[in-house]
Amino acid sequence: MSRHSGGHANEALLRDLRLAVWRHKEPEGEFMVLSQIRQTLDHAGVAYDGCRLYRVQADPGACKMRVHPLTSNGHWSPLTAGQQWVLGAWKSAATCYRAPSRHGECAWLAQQMRCRVKAILETTFDQGVLAVYRKEAIACSDADIGLFKGLGEVLCGLYYRQEDLAQLRRAQTLPGTGLAGKTNQHLAAIIGATNRLRPPAAGTGVQACSIAHVRPQKTRKEQVNFTRLVQETVGRMRRALLQDQIEIVAALAPDLPYVKAHAGQLQQVLLNLIQNSHDAIKQVRGTGRIELRLSTRQGCIVLEVEDNGPGIAKEIRADIFAPFFTTKASSQHSGLGLSICTGIACDHHGRLFVEDCAQGACVVLELPINPPAALALLRYVQARRA
Ligand SMILES: Nc1ncnc2c1ncn2[C@@H]1O[C@H](COP(=O)(O)OP(=O)(O)OP(=O)(O)O)[C@@H](O)[C@H]1O
Ligand SMILES: [Mg+2]
Image (cartoon, rainbow, N blue to C red):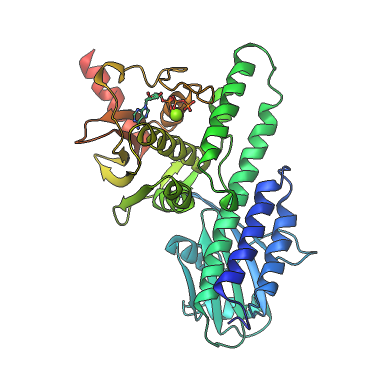
């Protein structure tokens, strides 16, 4: 599909985009990045006759979708027809080059694009779908697919960052003194520490979502594909961990259900747990391994983060979830990481705990797939015990 682009040239273009996301400080900075995405497609030589960005906010009952043409004068409009095809693509969580094959999709696209679409290159990300459409079904290169995967990551990072910036802005109205102010300073330290893991070129990601725990405000929960969140987080951190000779692997059970959650907060838990494993391994070894496992158990989605560091001594296992508990000497560590993660787990009606493992430490996040049913069961058990 591209005229002259290659993998290396595309990497450079993606790096610029990631930096643009990383640098923008305004929650409203979205449009600048969107127009840069369009320019990237042109610079990479991707041939297309039409281009659309869809934002998906899916709930079991209702599904809101918006569409943007990515032109400089374009704007978001509600997607009134064709939602089922976009949702189908989004649920597939894939990047692919395909012909519009689903029943009715051809007619809908002809209406949208005002031409007969023969080929689609699309990528999905946590918050939506990016697609380009072509009148001719000419071959698509691996470089194009790679570029599209990268663009999906960039968009995902952009929207998490927007969310974080908006939260940060709300948190800035907190008084600068007292516990809230102090806690914010500590949070800045954690965020800084978590950021140490992030490679500068891949600087698209979660930042400061822990603020939500400090200031208990209801954040919007959506149906989250936890598998995709873990894949993305691992993919984003792999390179930085490898620089410290630490391998990170993910074992993901197939067909896991979506969970109603705040994706940004779940990613914050992931980042904090991986950061703790990273710190632990570095204390005792030159090389190491972190394994993330995602599965279901008794109505819950279970995420296990296991490392081959020194492990967590039995005597302190009850203390590590308390605020300000730390065994780390550096002033960069406030000891708030696990207490914030516990707050996030509770806010999702789940729990965080340490599990025995053969070597090192294993920290587990358990989230009920159906929180109302889990709460009803808990109340029943408590009532029986009383
Ligand atoms: N994977 C692990 N291996 C060994 N010890 C761990 C691990 N995870 C947590 N701990 C212990 O739990 C303590 C508390 O962790 P927590 O994340 O709350 O704070 P921290 O990492 O010390 O500081 P911060 O999160 O602010 O950087 C750590 O200081 C460490 O002693
Ligand atoms: Mg920590």
